[in-house]
View (cartoon, rainbow, N blue to C red):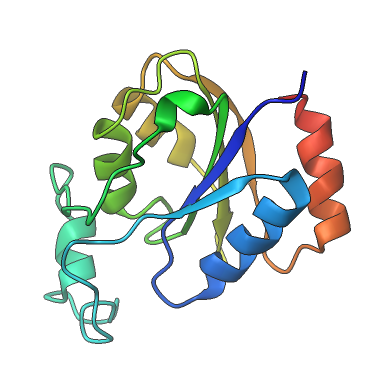
Length: 159
């Protein structure tokens, strides 16, 4: 039986949104955008400014930016691809907010990310405590991946 799959993603600039759309198409999955209650401005995303919103959030381990909405019917899904841009070598703190706002018990979570330079690094170990009862599968960067390559990856995961 094929799993019911959700691709949930956070995208600040549109890069991760494009990757998530392609992945959802390749996986035959539904799509959910994780949106901050207060949208990020260009100034908020200025990583060179130590006082910008994203810099302050990323430097505070307890930061949990509010999300605009939750997945209404998460119980309907068996597997969740969770995507985001890599910020400061890890997931933006809003991803922790998203994980903690839902019950992922017994659900498979596969991370995917877009990045200008760094890989996933220790992202999974940083996120696991936010959904300790989920079944974590190895994720990957999908910068510029084709739909065909994504289809092969999804099939290899045997979700």
